[in-house]
Image 1: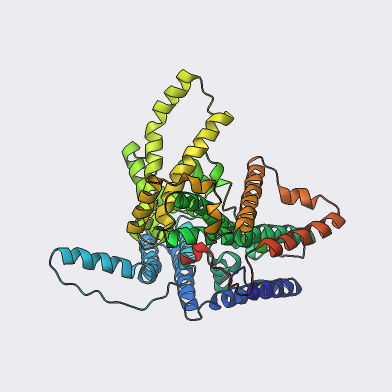
Image 2: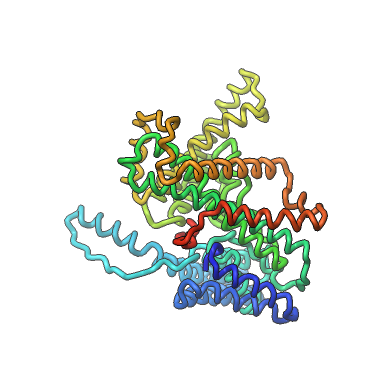
Length: 498
């Protein structure tokens, strides 16, 4: 069930209404049933995988805590707890590996052995990647590790824990919530709050604007250029690659925003997942502001356990590269994703290595690091680096990405930027203009976010008559300028494939 589908527009109001009518004791059960129904709308069978991950990590948490309360020596307790943790991790990661990476790695093995003249016929399975498996697996594993570290107590009620893993607004594409934040919120008494509902609804409308008005419209241009890069070569691909950076931002931030808004209407606050990333002045800053729930997850549960920056400069850089390579693999079972992750890790390592030289240049030239000019130039350079890496993310294969890069770097048709040729690459003049206006609105919204200006709060402070006018205008704008039509089918969010 997609957020931008008719089914969800029927499903969510029903869930919301019944949720606030039910007594406190059964509210969480209703949300649990609703969450599983939401997930089963994609594939009923794969809800068993969600249930398996839930049961394994639930029992793992219980066992780890019980071991702590036994009379075993500290050493034996530590060994036993670690054994439970490792087994639980292996089961969950094993399921993830089989459904997402089995074919990828067996293919690599087959090709490698073939070069050694060894015949290897890899077994094949007709597997459909379960929606959201990477997201809910990481959320469940984060909980288990938190229990192991004694950051939280294990949840004894399996139904309550099952809701934490399956909470439908963020189930299939995040934000990947932490147990400390979400578990405690799910079971607090929630009374209907009109202000929170209005705030949540406005947040959802912004998410729909990002997805339906911007992301789905930009996708038409990008898909047209990338599907036939030989005919739409050179500067068409330059424009398409720049626009893809905006598309994936609007698509994923759109999903996260709708998730945050719908949760808020239920009285639950989810973590912020994007913080104006394209206004970052370095790649490191970009990754602090992009997909925050995942990057912070990798930091807390992979980078720091690997040693973080505690074991010297070489180990720190090695750990960063490893984290970004794993991040690339997390996004997809393809070499192109690994290259994308590796590039972003390499950018950060090179950036840190060059920082002393840059500091000397700034000192000699008397450049203020906090000045607008310095940040602007840094922002442009950062965008170019990040956008270049997006080519490997968007391309269906590494070979395809290399061909696109060749076409971009040998571009010889700059006139298409000025002779209206761009209006023939999927979007006509009107739709191209709507797209540009939408991007300007997005940029203004991100500037407001950087400045700490909350548009939602500004609207909240207005009189009810103003709210009664502005909300229908927002809805009208989305309906008027969104990508619809008689043959419209709700477009999948990009991150559903991960």
